[in-house]
View 1: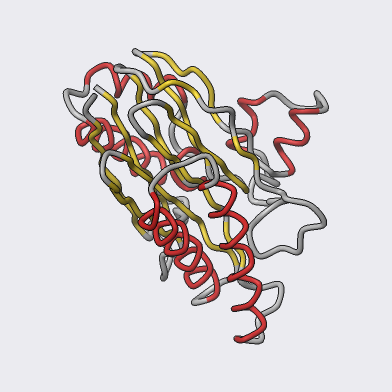
View 2 (view 1 turned 90 degrees about the horizontal axis):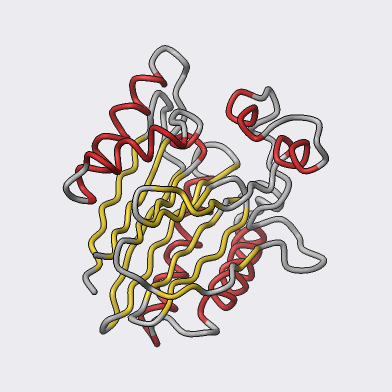
Length: 242
C-alpha cells in the first residue's frame, strides 16, 4: 500500500487566509488535518492553526490509534477555549476541523462544521461528511435538496464548530473502514467545495495520473468559478491509496 498526498491553501480574494492545513507521518501511519477559522482577522487564523497544530502534535506521539481522533477533538477544544480566555476573545475564535487518519489496516475520519471529507473508491464517490450548517439542516428536514446547499443564502451559517461551548461533543467520528488500494480522499473547506460539483471532482479524478494532478485540475475549476465573486479562502488535501 502506497499513500501519496497533496495539499493547497489560498486566501482567494480575501486579505487574510483563515484556513489551516497539515499532514504528518508516524512510522507507517498518516494523518491529515484541515480547518477553516471563523472570527475575522487574526482570530480565525489563530483558531484554525491551534487545532491543526494540536492534532499533529498528538499524532506524532503515538500515531493513528482508536483513541486518536477523539483526543484530537477534545484536547483541541480545551486548548481553544483556554486561548479564548487568555486573549479575551470568548466566542470569537472558532474553527471547523476535519481529520483523516490512515494506517495499513484501516481509515477513519472525524469532522465538525462545514469543511468536508469526500471518500472515493475507484472513480466514484462513496460518501462525504454532512455539514453542521443551516442549509444541511434544511436538507435533513426535506425543505431543500442537497444540490441547493452550494448556492443557498445561509450557506455560511455554521451551527457546530470548535470553540463553541459544548453541552456534549459536537464533532462526528465515522466508523472505520478497511484501507484498500484504489481509495481516494479529499478534505476541503467550503471555499473549495462550493465552487466544484461532485461530478467535476470525479471527472478530474478520472483523468489525473497522480494526486498532484487531481488537486491541480480541481483547483483550476474552483478558481474559474470563483472569479469576480469575492472568493473566500479555499483549501484542500487530496490523498491516494494505491
